Length: 99
Figure 1 (cartoon, rainbow, N blue to C red):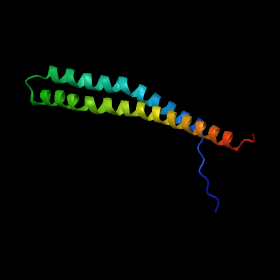
Figure 2 (figure 1 turned 90 degrees about the vertical axis):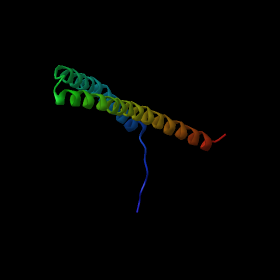
Figure 3 (figure 1 turned 180 degrees about the vertical axis):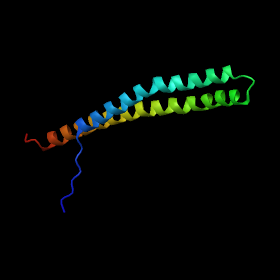
Figure 4 (figure 1 turned 135 degrees about the horizontal axis):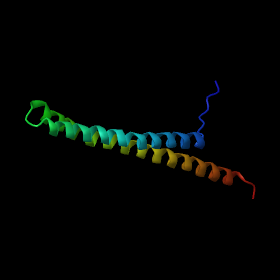
């Protein structure tokens, strides 16, 4: 059985770019949704659903922001992992070079 673990830094960087792009594309619609929820709640002041809409928007705001930040953090971690693997490969290659 020939099982090898192979890490391709370019694939890690591609995944980092995808995570970063998703995070960047996610923010505007998330902000729009929570802003619209608050606005709708304000327009329905006096109705029982108005306070509920505002509360829902307020509750989701930090969750959606944390999700966007997590995507950004994932991108940074993937890039750092790619760099770490490249540095490690260089150190191993240098250690095996003839003097």
